[in-house]
Length: 577
Ligand SMILES: Nc1ncnc2c1ncn2[C@@H]1O[C@H](COP(=O)(O)OP(=O)(O)OP(=O)(O)O)[C@@H](O)[C@H]1O
Image (tube, rainbow, N blue to C red):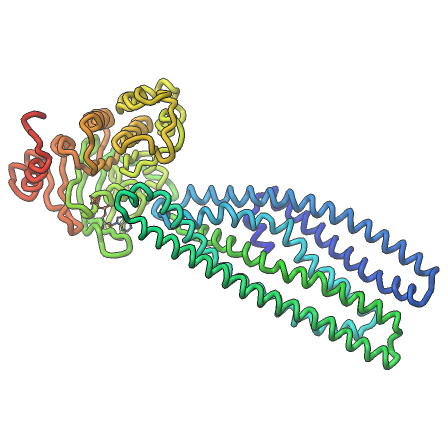
């Protein structure tokens, strides 16, 4: 455990932790010595040898003062070590989160991260101060007492020694029992918090769909599972603590009975026996205390296990030296990919020329968004190659791909900050004027104009004060600011009002310039103005590809798809041409 704490500590936290451990050991030794001094002290008291008693009293007072001083330092350093450890844990977690592959993040992982970042990290950080101190003291103090007992009476010391492995066995069993219960409980807590957050987020949908009862039921089930897991943890933990306390009490009884026999046989005088029995109680006290806290270690261990699991998540392969793309074209070469089930894309090959717009169309679930996620390198394909400028993505490395690609996805996240700051994160080095200029090109100025505080109006959590189309305009403005040579655009599927429709069209024109654009296209205007259209077949491949005019002239699947869409939209081609 101590090794694991040191592993997750920063250099300064590690230094504090080691210093604290030294102080804890010193405290425990002094406590043990103070207990041992009780033997001559009590023996002299019962024998009425007052002269020697004074000497032992002074010695005891000296050791006690030293103990208080060292214990005070131990607790002060312990508190500082705890704070430093908490900082290190949260920093390690943050560093890991920004390096985890994007594909790792899903909604059911948010409960795990929240659990580690809140109770988990707090619990681990209290280890040095509140728990480790008592546990180490609980073992070092009795060990010191035991060594001293051999000096006073080896037979009682031997009896006590025999009990030690039994106590250690009991302690381990107790820790394992609590650890098992806590592992189950942690999973249940993460699941329940996911469900509650989901329930809160889904309120608008649930109310309109009248599905509140189903969601209620899911939350209730998750809370019941958590309740059961908690009860299970209390039952196993409580039984473990009771059993361990029983073992500790048994050891006192053994010493008591043996001591009584020795006193009756005359091989030990009553004064020494009383002193040794007092020592026996002192011997057991810290151990029983450590038993109560052994569960704390198990709970902290669960959090450390979760951090280890996070550390073990394999990142996508990175090259030793990043390759340089020849241009900003994108190539798919026999790409096959699935999310663990069947293949979503099968032997898919195409080239999206640099500086041109490629529109991807096709049935729902045919893998359009998946293509954009492979380009952004959220995943690597199972077989085949995705390349940028002729260089396969793994040879470019994630950071090069991230810098080259600006994604404008449908689930754009806006922070609960001003609308301007939400655009600004596209490139924090620009000035306010530059940000406003870019945002204006994406037609975000119209949104700012209607908000009470203009550019400085907060947009609510997740951008809840803006419409879907408006959020997408902010996202396009971010892409403009980032000025990446490749833009991935997943157009909103939901119908947009005419204002947003025109504004998004203008925003796309602004971002298009000479960039390579891959658009999961739903707007007819986008589709027909693309330099290349890929029609997916719904079986992981491409059915037809070409320009709008070529494909219409071919009068195949695309032509049918197009006419259906035009009819459905009641679109007047002539009006827009
Ligand atoms: N993270 C994921 N985990 C598991 N399966 C996924 C994941 N994302 C997508 N899928 C599945 O992969 C398939 C392709 O999804 P994708 O979103 O690429 O389709 P799409 O053509 O963009 O669909 P739509 O037009 O409906 O948005 C679907 O069957 C979908 O359920």
